[in-house]
Length: 306
Image 1 (cartoon, helix red, strand yellow):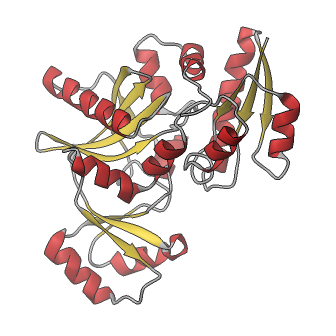
Image 2 (cartoon, helix red, strand yellow):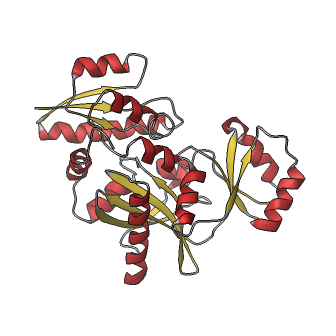
Image 3 (cartoon, rainbow, N blue to C red):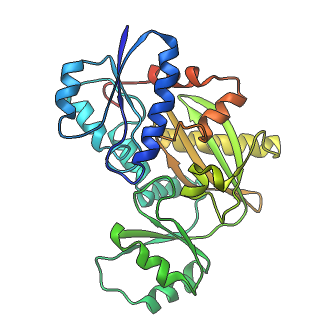
């Protein structure tokens, strides 16, 4: 019986989503009756528990900072244990929205123009607004440099820009990005396979944290996506290219805006959610891949050093 240590919870703003993901995965794996499962959080006794349990692999279901930014991955590598999803470098690059965008731009992947803003420096709101007017134009998207699940993301016009910017002061650094209208399309990659795409029509302004995880927000999920075969193949190919550029493992999900017949890659998520409302399991279901098969494929791609 394989010993699987499941890592969930943690210290990020996405703690609850991580625990819900773990609950869904544990429920499924128990049905197989071939796994010895232990759920733990990355607390002060984490390494001690890891060494005592001696798992065959660690199923990393953490989200956000410390869970998908290379931090926990470096600990797992130092313990020489197999773990799922992307490794240290891939994780740290993907969660850093500026670094990943630089890689995308260098490799001719279209992504919205942006500039980075730091609260560490003295700043003048009028100067920032002038820079936006000259380089990006309003509306713009404000987002923390290294958070996931659309935590702290605001679409801002000139009128509410200052108010929204100050809401993000605790994050220290912020990406100010040109807002791209159009359709929201997400593409999933599993190992070396193009899993497929799904379109989202949020009732809210965009697919934010509430739209992702609240039943009441009622985002419409559209699959199959009404799109030409050429564009279908194009967006899947871009997602695969980004996946490979960042040297991702397991599953990744790339978030796009489709506007004027062009795909703009917003960001890549190395550990997408696996809750009942999550997109990757839904895309997999459409491809006749069960939740169990999806989880086991992710586990089969686990490695000691990635």
